[in-house]
Image (cartoon, one colour):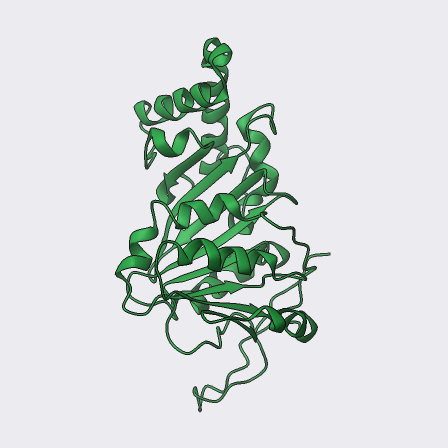
Length: 277
C-alpha cells in the first residue's frame, strides 16, 4: 500500500516552534553495506562538497530499523573529511532508541522527519528507500522541504536500491533543482541495463513508458549494451564502459568518465530524464 506524505506541521506563525515530525513511518527494511554504491559516489566525485563545507554536517534521513547504514556512512565520510558530523534521523522512536548506544563523537541519532531537526544546514542529505513509499504527487513538496535546508553547495540524494544493494539509483538535487540521475549495478545482477527500472526513484518509476525521457534512456542503454556484446569476453566492465561511451557519443549528457563507468555506474544530467509534465 502506498503511503501518502503528511502535511507540514510546523506553525507558519512561529517557524521556530517544532511540531510533530514530518512524514510517515516506513517499513524500515535495511541491510549492512546496502548503500555502499552511493557512499562511494559521495566519497568520490562529490567529496569536494564535504571538503569545502564550512560545517561538514550530514544527514542520513530515514535510516530504517537498523542504524548500520548510518554508521557506515559516518565511517566512509570521516575518511574524506575529518570532523564530519553525521545525524541519523528516524521518525519511529524505537529505532532511535535502539541506535543511541552506537553514538560517538561525530555520530548522533535524532527523532524527526523531512523537517530535518539538526543544528545547522547540512551539506549532504541522504534519503534512501524513503520517498519511494509516498505518492508521486508528494515528491516535489518533500524535495523542496529538504532543499530549503541545504547549506550552500549542499546536495540532497533521493534514492532507491534493492535489498542488498546490487541495483541502485539516485537523484541528486541542489538547493534549486534536480541535477543528475545515477544508476549503479553489480555486474551479473541483470540481463539488460533496463532491468534497473524497478528500482527507479519515485519521481521516475511511473514514467518508464514510451514517450517519457527515462524510457528513452533505458532503451538506449539496452541498445548500446547489446551492440557491445563483442566485448563480453573481456569482461562486463569493458562492456559497460563501451555502453557509456556509446551513449556519450550519441548525445546523451553522460557525466564522469571511465573510472566511474568501470564500477557499473552511469550518471546523466537531469535534462535527459526529466518527466515531461
